[in-house]
Image 1 (cartoon, helix red, strand yellow):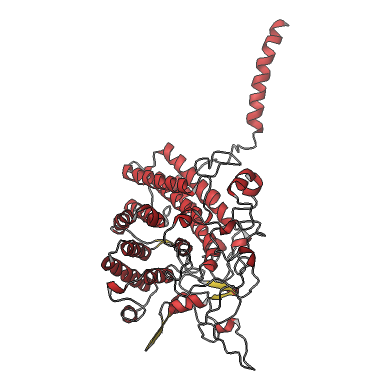
Image 2 (cartoon, rainbow, N blue to C red):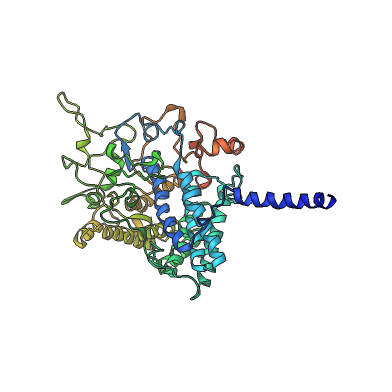
Length: 510
């Protein structure tokens, strides 16, 4: 009997451990809990396109590319995010891209896959840069720690973390060898396993990052050396969708079928069907020379409307066109008086989706050289950026030559201005969220963007301030991390008008 009681605790312990293993709902004995990097990478690359789109879906309205036909639209016209219940861009970084990058990095370490580990770190850095440039401060050091309320790092700290990820990613790629698992076109949808191209892409991400702070940290030399290093081996980072897609997840999110994959958030489907080009965008695409009324890219970025007209509406004011005739009997503008925003180069269901394009690197080089007072280098890079973009869109060489010699493009380095560079970059990066970064860095100044104006319908509550960031996701951050929201001031109705770090520090504002 004494022996029985001595053994009972041991038996109970074994039974408890056994039951725990059998009843653990977090472990499926049949389904794997991890997967090979070759199966994880395509999801990361596909999700990154959705992530980039989820930022551009909003920034394209804030950066004057397009405006809603409705002058009461809360976000697009009034700049009022206070009733938004989900901000999918936050999730696309932390869950869809970031967690998969982390998973691939961890599995790559155990598999000895330096190629996949390096690409994973570079993509995680790119995703972080995309997110922080819209949101500002965000969890980095405590992200993926299992905490529901991680501490938010300053954007400056996040930038430092991104640089570390880029450095580590390049080091991993340099260590890659014949023993690494195969990375082919099936796994790598961007560079088909070419690690030198991935290293050039990492330097392109770094060049974009350095440009954001160069004006206040004396970093233009670093920008130029980095962008030149990237250009030596750079190929466009573009995700290609099927030309004739049938399923939503095969389609570009800007497409006319308004794709809405099952895992998507309802707040980020496109509304190009109720949007039109702005008057500022049309001003930048208007040349007005004999025989050259418009920049030929206009016809590639949009498609003709019912009337074949190319008007531009005032941002936030609905279908209000400057100088539209108001004599009795004149009909007010309708959607038929504007270009169709669908089926342009970037807005078909089967359009490619850009990560970073080669022309952006030339515009980065042009801006850095301009602020270094090297106008000769700036002029050459600016013109090369325009040329590359026109070639991409399928403009003929004759048309490219005519445009490059037109009044729209500077011929003399001594006459080059910052607006020449930024306006052409604006056209080349059509619908990309990086344009919003440029506008905020330059304080929405008329020196940088001639003709820009404060939207008339924006709520007077904002006191004439320009929109500066996206709000954090209501259904995660404000519920699970209220102390950090309060500490940052993110509970204020006007939080989106608080400049992010590099915009607040910028010396480029008027």
